[in-house]
Amino acid sequence: MAARPDSHTAINQPPLYQDVDLYGSDLPLRQAVAANGAGHEDAALRAFGRHWGSAAMFDQARLANENPPRLHVYDARGERSDTVEFHPAYHHFMGESIAAGLHASTWQANAERAPAPAEVARAARYYVVAQVENGHMCPITMTRAAVAAFAGDPSLVGMLMPKLASRRYDPLFRPWREKNGITLGMGMTERQGGTDVRSNTTRAEPSGNEYRITGQKWFMSAPMCDAFLVLAQAPGGLTCFFLPRFRGDGSVNALHFQRLKDKLGNRSNASTEVAFDGATAIRVGEEGVGIRTILSMVQLTRLDCAISSAGMMRAALARALHHAQHRRVFGKTLFEQPMMRAVLADMALEVEGALAAVMRLCRSFDHPDLPAEMARARLLTPAIKYLICKTAPALVYEAMECLGGNGYVEDGVLARLYREAPVNAIWEGSGNVMGLDVLRVFGRDETGSAALDELQREAADIRGVSEAVERIRRALAAGEADARISVEAIARLAAAAALKTSAPPMIAEAYGRTRLGGSRATFGTAGLGLDVTASLLGRACGEG
Ligand SMILES: Cc1cc2nc3c(=O)[nH]c(=O)nc-3n(C[C@H](O)[C@H](O)[C@H](O)COP(=O)(O)OP(=O)(O)OC[C@H]3O[C@@H](n4cnc5c(N)ncnc54)[C@H](O)[C@@H]3O)c2cc1C
Image (cartoon, rainbow, N blue to C red; front, side, top):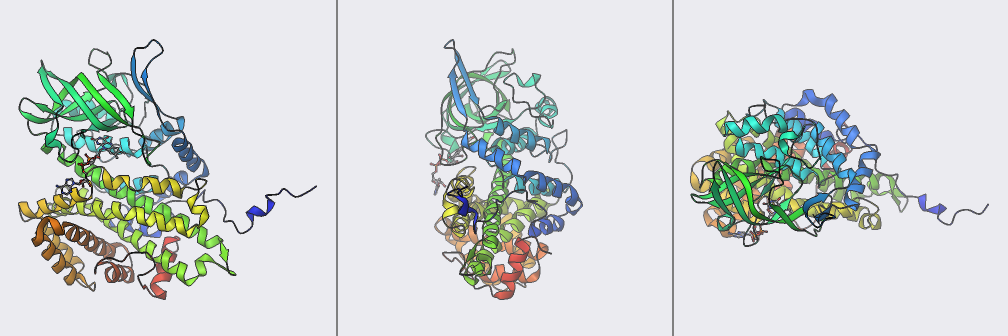
């Protein structure tokens, strides 16, 4: 029998990247988890990592993204339907993440924070999930963050927490009071200005104990959430509202989806343009304090953006390492080629810094009772979100190139990751908005300076730290024009300090030496030296 014409194609092609333990094979992750207080979760996290790294999960992720959601504006009778249909694979991931508690595990039943290390333990799982399917993480993040907005309202807490804390995903379109578990979304951004929510024109008119909301939102994602936190202009000013899909009497609320956004990435998730036509809503917080009400929620969504982008970076690095270990060029594996090792090690260092920074930041969120940790969280959430979310696209691109042509085609996962990577920098406060937020921290009181001093003390013996702090102070004094200089350098300093606590000294030192002094254009130019390179690559491959 003649050989199949394509039988040569398996030659020198790496095996499929699947059935990996996404936790156990990641030494920096294991060390960061242990350094930040969640080491006792090791066995559970290994099981989680194996489950999420299975071939079946990767395949479900492909399906969820190849079959994007569809909007049904009308039903067969011509009546408004305003529903969005998701592929079963999307529901599969919602069920998995909710069963794992990613939407609620950091809250107690009374909406107080769960004890440490709830944040770090959740972040480790979130980091793993981000390596598999990203679109469904949007409603997971919004649900867990929304609790912060209504935590001060005992009646909302009493009503919502039992449903929200449930580990059962209930995708049915019916009133939230009748469901086994609920998810929450957010509608803040309007056509005339997302960042500048003060310019919102959506109106809220009091009607008995409730309000009628009229207006539009230019972006409102995960439209099949059971309710949304919405900003609207009440008589007393900009106010936060709880706007459910169904009214209290069981009728469908007046949310009218105009269309779904045709997005670059994030394709398993739906994002709508929506009109509210006198939709019924309940006030969250006092009238006129809408921005203050959503502030603590926004901190949490920003934190998740950073964790998720770090996870995407790890996903890209892992695939580059896998390819390089198996693909032979000029008689050696790519992994053995000196220039490829320099590129991979530089990427591994970037991922280590991102991971260490974000896990250390989660530890701060685990300690709301400690003022120094809260000051740190306030300063570093925008700074770290800025750095990690902006670094991810460049790193994913470099990983793509490590795979050569295989990286550029849709058969693999890097093309999807590449399209996904920019979104975390754009939503939940884009880059410049993070810069303004950091300036606000320094402008208001001593919070920023105290946190910066603490970082300097922690990282003192790393070369380049005092110069970096001087540069930060100069940039801060220059104001908005130099804000990106200060924000990036603060995040780099935080990463160096965090690496000191979770990685060997040579890694923290290499990070400081190559990252604290300013920017380089490409990966592979760090001049890490043979020992550091070998250590970084071994760690990234799970050795140790
Ligand atoms: C896929 C996707 C899903 C989304 N889902 C939701 C959702 O569910 N709910 C929701 O409410 N929103 C959602 N958004 C909207 C998102 O939060 C906004 O797009 C984002 O906040 C930016 O707002 P904007 O698009 O109006 O841009 P603008 O506010 O116009 O900003 C444009 C640019 O200007 C910069 N900028 C703004 N102010 C300044 C300044 N003073 N100085 C210097 N630069 C400045 C910004 O950093 C940004 O780079 C989603 C967006 C995307 C892409």
